[in-house]
Amino acid sequence: QVQLVESGGGLVQPGGSLTLSCAASGSIFRINARAWYRQAPGKEREFVAAITWSGDRTNYADSVKGRFTISRDGARNTVYLQMNSLKPEDTAVYYCAVAVGLTSPGADPASYNYWGLGTQVTVSS
Image (tube, rainbow, N blue to C red; front, side, top):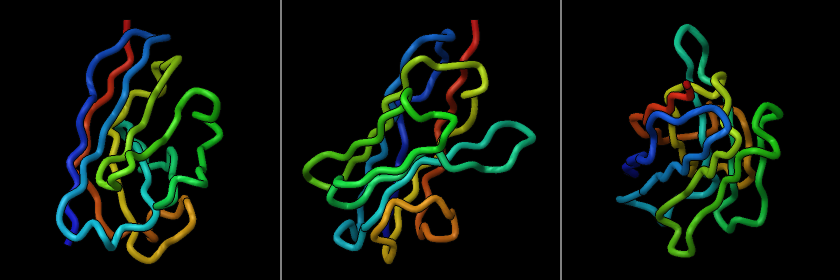
């Protein structure tokens, strides 16, 4: 089992920045790809970004490309999402997910085995 805890969400003005963190515990040796998803009120959960276990490959949704950066620490137990130039449409609950079998930074949520409970990000003036 893997447990995930997100942090770093909050209220930020348009154009501002936030960094989300996702700490993993438990059987972290099993983790391969790691990803961030988000879900806005009344909308389906959508892919944001993903990274391989080694950090050598990343994948981003077109809507965040150039503004968000996903990274991981060397100890393999925390993944980050640096969010810059935030827009009101970025408002959502952000979820961290990890995959046991997936070795590429895929966008299909069915590939991810463990999910956090989410952290709220609100972009508003």
